[in-house]
Image (cartoon, rainbow, N blue to C red):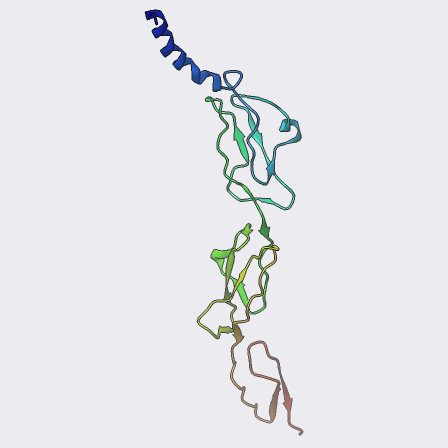
Length: 185
């Protein structure tokens, strides 16, 4: 092997990585696949995009965009697409409202993925009868588990009968109504 031939081998090794570059400098190939999302129809079958191009995806039916996550990719100067976190997911609607408790302030949001659990706090007039907070969980079918009724109405005490009358009530718990009936005469 002659001296000229030995010099061409390192040059060939330097040029070899260029074969794996996209067809043109400054261009990204087809769009990346994003879970549970699709690009606009106009960009679906486009083979390449110039540097700086931005494409905004939308969630497939049955999925919604997660708050605070980007839904847009950009063709970067290195001819690669920017990274995009999975931004589409399945979400339960708002958690169920119950008469005895309210959702804890720090549990309120606008995206509830499967297996998310929210805590409730007893409403005024109700007391928790256990050491646990009532909770509800977003299930696989995008419905909420039943909220256990761990908050019970507080007792207001038995009201004293007024002079020349009496109180008629079914119970003496929060929210109960009482009638006052005057004696004859």
